[in-house]
Image (cartoon, rainbow, N blue to C red; front, side, top):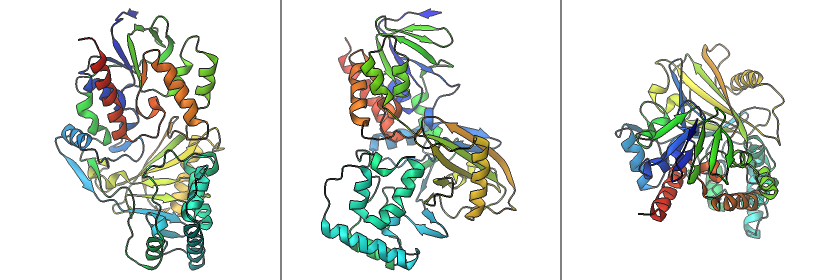
Length: 436
């Protein structure tokens, strides 16, 4: 079947960016979504009475417009949470962020970390060429190599030296000496984390926050793109359906979009091949025990423990788990730079073993739900070739009236609020430039 519409604006992907574009463009666009439901990486899944999001989602946006939009989507029925965040460095449970809460670590390690921090503070901050150097310049050799270096290998799947620093923004706090000393000596929490409070829907999971964006959207499900003929401005989907467009808005993964372009220039294909990301296996567990969680989420620095981060969805809303149960979600990342060397089933088994090892669950606990999900596109990797390759591809596409939005469309480390604003900005831009 062929659908004409040479003046049409067509959208690929019904995630937060695609839905936001549609909503702010007065839904004057048809959305084509590969999956059977809307939400993208902000989807929530009901599994045997438990609700699991596709990762540890919550809203901590400072943007007044997005904050109001999300609240109105659920009629103001959300939980305002002041999260307790911990770190696990066996056998210690430590407060967060770790760089300003060293108390609880072995004394010799604390002393080494402080001495190295004094050295780098006296030396002053230079111009780091990569993330690894940024870490050492900011925290000192001992702390950097013991903690964020290890976490980078688990979360980003590469060495810190392989990454740039453009993604950091406010995500990692660089303390002064007074803050480091206070956190090493005092029982008082030195909270310098960029998240002070979060919002989460009372019911329906994180996806509920996007309800108002979805209302009125013309979403076609089960449409996976096969080819784009940019000369004819025609999309062919794997189900055989063909659709013409005037402008194409894409929130699908940027490298995948380029792979579908017919007769794509070699230099663009080469640039797209340089765009990397991680993948993640989410391990979801339901445990027949209340008050199991000692925090909302925690980070794990020990590299012999498979997950890098664990959170408790039932701590965000009582409706995320049946009464008397606790829900757990653990993240295990991999990429072409770091394979797991085991099957998805083995990842699930090893994760349960590791959670028992570090004392999150007991071996006698009744685990009534065991589930896992393999997500191929997780975090965008900021390596040395990222910025130039990304700009080359995006400029080429825009010259063809193909506009990219959201985390995977823009191929940038965007949070959900930033993805919503990405779609909004493009809608306003196209509306302004469209003929009256």
